[in-house]
Length: 594
Image (cartoon, rainbow, N blue to C red; front, side):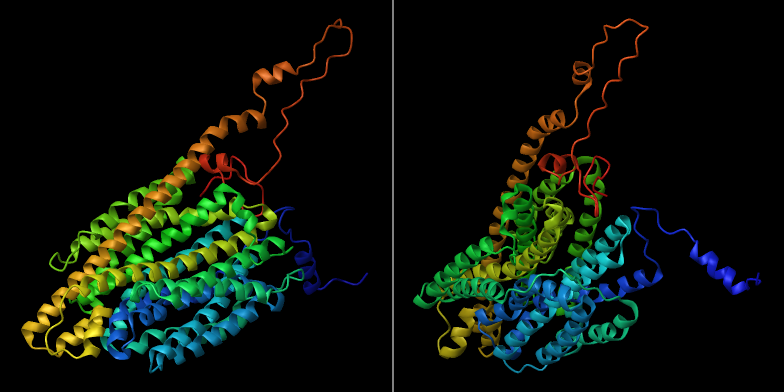
């Protein structure tokens, strides 16, 4: 027999090397974790691009002279486009390849960033931001889908998804600081150029570190549903903004009515399709609906107040962009602390209690913000926003997992897509609604203030529309008249900030009440569910067979073991006790929120 070479022996040893035990997924290695670092970059960028313009709004007002409505569209059209195209882009990635969609989206995002940076007018910038939103919608589902395929081990996948979500949150929170530093040294268009180096890194490192995945059974995109979803939201938002800016007029009201009619058509279509864009039947599950509402409205409150607060720092208190970004840092630290503490507390008390408690702790935040004024300095506003950020981020740290865990396993992907859509929609609506409410109050306050004699109609109308317009108009007046106009405008803007803060106080109280009701129902159902799931000692004794035969006969059969309850998706009682659906397996008492 021929002697085996060393190479043959080494190959044989490799061939018998034990693999993962049956039922256990292979653990990710160095390449996967390096790939996660690459995937964190676009996630950070998406969150950052959501909020980077909050600090640049005064500079945009000075350079491009947009109307109040145009300024809101510049800021929030990005979020609306991301929300509208998120789910269909995920389906498209399943069909053509998730890495391919990610790289294509990165190139498109970089090109749209260059177009936005070179925009010379408000209309061009709005269109560029819309293209950025469509390109950004390709990045989020691609990164999350790749993470789920790269990390098969449930524990590693939980950690990787947590890193992914943390980068998105950090991007949104540090956006004002990054924007302030850029505006301090460069022109306003520099805030849009952040997507260019990130796109370059993805195009270089992506093919080397990221695997390609496709889903052979992926459904077909439904362009009609996509068009209906976008055309439902945008006309309603347009009508709301125009009504807040100019009062009740025919065209804005017709746009709202048209949007609502299109929304009814969208809902009817989704209920009839076998594979809908958004599975609206999931809203019949109380935990799903309440958790999604908490995610959407929680981000609505934080983002809307951040948008107004950063303008308050610059236009009312007169801080520089960099100083305004630095004063936002305490809220960043508070939000990170709340997000990190929430899972540890939920492990002991259950996620529903933590979410309800987080929203309740956030209530004093807007109350403190309502005490901020032109002469109060930044401390009340900083303290109020830090309290708001801590409570809301603690609640939101658990809502995404509750959304996915409350859905049936076969609908978990659709539930995740709805959750991501709700998050982006909440951020965009927060800016749109808070900005419109503040603008309506601002105009109403200034309508009762006579403008200085000799002021031209153009600057006068600009002063009544935005605080940036009032600052520019005041610069062209004599010092005393300019100070009077600017003082009235600052007081009016602060009144709008207070109104938005009180609105968000009501929203937080509503969310707290909804989660407490859900917790009460969970606690009332838990004893019945437990008794039905596993028989106690008395029940086991009742079913024990009687033995009347003499000792010489065969022994009686042993009492039957209690039958384990059938695995199912966690219900409200499970969530109240802190159970969760572990990735890749059914929920159980041992699968608590980490």
